[in-house]
Image (cartoon, rainbow, N blue to C red; front, top):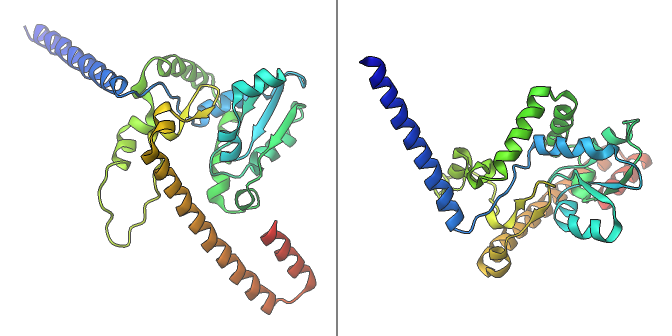
Amino acid sequence: MQNRSLFKAGILTLVLVVLAITSWEIYLRTHGIGISYDDGKELWSDKRAMVYMPLDKATVFIGSSRNKYDLDIATWEAMTGDHAIQLAIEGMSPLPILDDLSNDKKFKGKLIVDITEILFFSTDESSLGEPKDRIEYFKKRTPAQRFSFEVNHVLESKLVFLDKDNFSLNAMLDKTRIPNRPGVFVMPIFPLDFGRVKFSRQDFMTERFLSDTNLQNQVKGIWDFFRKISKIIRCVWMVFFITRCLFFPTLILIFNEIFYFFI
């Protein structure tokens, strides 16, 4: 009798879970949201493994958001006949990836590097940590992790709600419009339609974003915020430069700092 009750409870739970998942998937699709892949270390590693293609068959792209957004992979491949391997990471320095590829004796392909000065010449761990983590993951991937990636690829290609960057619990809590407490700073979040990701790691903007000026103005506001932050950083660097020159007025130091600041 008890076993039968547990069986019924299990069936009921299964039905409720399937109904909840189906309802959530239908809700997202009826709101015009399409498939997007999680652009994490797993997908990056899958593309990193492709760099060993013959020299005349592929071109590797590294950098930050300039290469990530400005490269249209389909157009590149149609015009050049080369397979585009996208390894750029938004907001990160390409130096760790450049170093990794240059020290990889098996890599003999073509490489295009996007240089965003404030990121490329940064020694801050905040712009170096993510590329280093992805490189380490690529080198230490286990067969189980590779199999898990392949299974996840199949599921992600069919189910919208598996987009963890937008529909996981943490992601949805981050997007909740709750006023910040005094003294609390939170980085702005780009609209969902601004950055969707294909399996090739091609970033693209949805048709809704291209036709909605409110969404476009929201992104412009975010970039203006980063522009102001960049100006503050440059001012701090200038103060640091002047201070060092006053206390260490050597010609070598001056040339070094001027070169770093103005490139």
